[in-house]
Image (cartoon, rainbow, N blue to C red; front, top):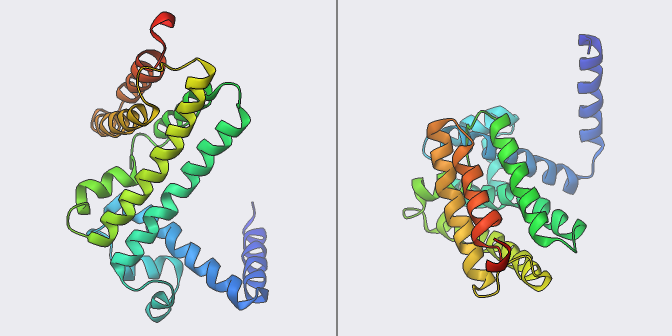
Amino acid sequence: MSRGKEQLTKKDNQSYYFSMPRSAKKEASRDSLLNQGVSMLMRQGYHGTGLQEILDAVNIPKGSFYNYFDSKEDFGAKVIQHYVDPFITQLTTHLQQSETDALGAIQHYFDELVAELEKNDFKGGCLLGNLMGEIGDTSPLCQQSLQTAVTRYRDLLQSGLIKAQQQGSVRADKSAGEMADLLINAWQGALLRAKIEKSSGPVKQCCQDLLGDFFRPLESR
């Protein structure tokens, strides 16, 4: 793309922004802050990221920040939900598109996560896991947001596993809730190993051992 086209695109984007209703502008600014928050917290952590750094990156004055968030801690809590929303949507879409093969939908979803991890050279990992280790026991507001995010994710996995049990592709002698908890816990641990080893081996083994073996009915193993 030529520089002239880049400038035209930028100008068009600015014109579009300034023509937006005030409520839409406010939502766009809030989303910009949240997107930047996800990016910086993934790279630098909560304590390593300053508010001014985020504001400078999205060109929003500090005074405006407090129109959207009460504090840095409140911002962090909102970033957590903003981060998990696309994963919820992604998994929901897979489950809806594969109504007759819920286990296959879950496997496909995790295959995409592994591919994304490899694409990013194992950097970042999972923001939920990162923040659990950094501020999970020191920030009550973020702790509650982390719990909410994990519960949303866990409940969606549980519903998918219940469908898979009904379809006969997942064992019925374990509850779907127990298996959803096990999958989340094992995945988070495997992600940490994948980061330090720069290898998708741990996360692939996690998926194979659980989704490809342990969760299967005994007669199909």
